[in-house]
Amino acid sequence: MANANIIDGRRVASDRIAELGANEIFVFGSNIQGAHGGGAAWFAHKRFGAEWGVGEGLTGRTYALPTMEGEMSLKHAVDHFVYCAKQHPELTFLVTAVGCGIAGYTAAEVAPLFKEAASLENVYLPQLFWKELN
Image 1 (cartoon, rainbow, N blue to C red):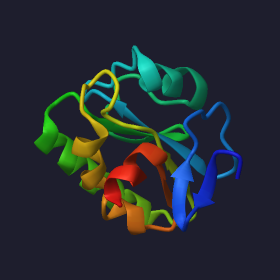
Image 2 (cartoon, rainbow, N blue to C red; image 1 turned 180 degrees about the vertical axis):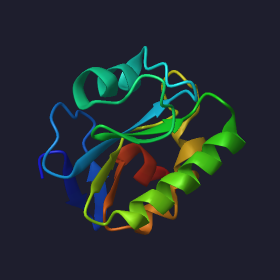
Image 3 (tube, rainbow, N blue to C red; image 1 turned 45 degrees about the vertical axis):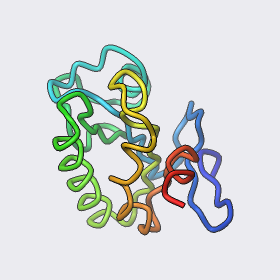
Image 4 (cartoon, helix red, strand yellow; image 1 turned 135 degrees about the vertical axis):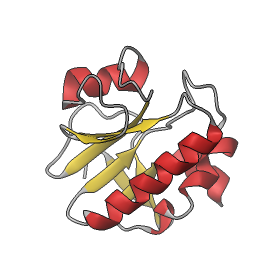
């Protein structure tokens, strides 16, 4: 898998995802309105089919996580994501450093929200998150 590696037993998503392999899903931070105007959201919209107006969930070859509505909202969105990943073991979810760009969170704030996701075989997290989870 070009977009992911296993490093020290951790499933690590690439920091630079330009193309997606079969069954790979690009997981990015958005806003609840689905206005994918900047950063990874813009890239997801232009490159992988994230639908304008959809701020959470699966669209195209992407999964949108709303990051701009506050930490509790983000926690709930990550819980929904974990549920989705469990329901779709045939898909490989490549998580970007959601929330650590335009939304302004640090990896130390966001990574713990992905603790359960880290145990799923089909979820690959950014190295930045793994550093905080270990």
